[in-house]
Amino acid sequence: MTRMIQLAKASLLPRKPVPGRGLLDASTTVLRVHPGDMDLYLHVNNGSYLQMMDVARSNLIADLGGYPLLKTQGWYPVVAASTMTYKRSLQLFDRVEISTRVLGWDARVVYIEQVFTCRDSFAARGWVAGRFLGKDGSRIDPADVVALLGKHGPVQSPALPDDVAAWARSVDVAHREAGRA
Image (cartoon, rainbow, N blue to C red; front, side, top):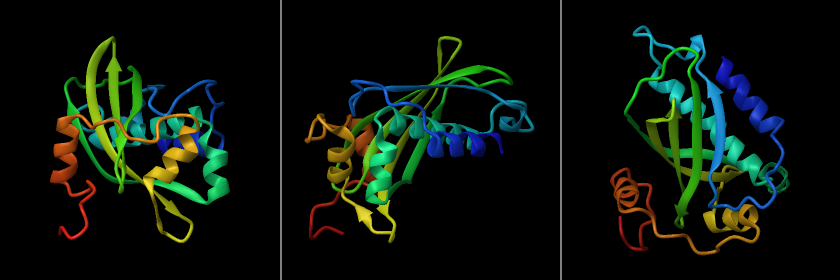
């Protein structure tokens, strides 16, 4: 429940935009591990990582000043696919820093990397392929979202890292050329 409240706050009462923040700049979110994040083995449940990532992505949008812009358009973000790699367990009351950054986009989704650090050590990494939908459920072209949120940023996506591009193809979220299944 704690993470849902944090997500509601991050989305409905977003933090202030960061002046000069670009679409490709990392956003940092600091959270603390709560008892509700723990599983029976007394480390953070894998689902809690995803909820923490939701909060951190909301903060990225807030840092860009994106919530009023998205609201005006009637657009909202959803996850199309995600994957996690875990290196080190998080423990109760650990202070966790999540670095969230846009890696790039194609004609279907925006690719985001989220890195968890605890006690100055890498703990986990997640990749998210995200979409934006309109109020009617229609898919919004990522280029339109980039133009809206990026303001003065790049209009061309940087090349995706090879491992992210391979993952996107393997889970079938990557853009496919017309005529391909």
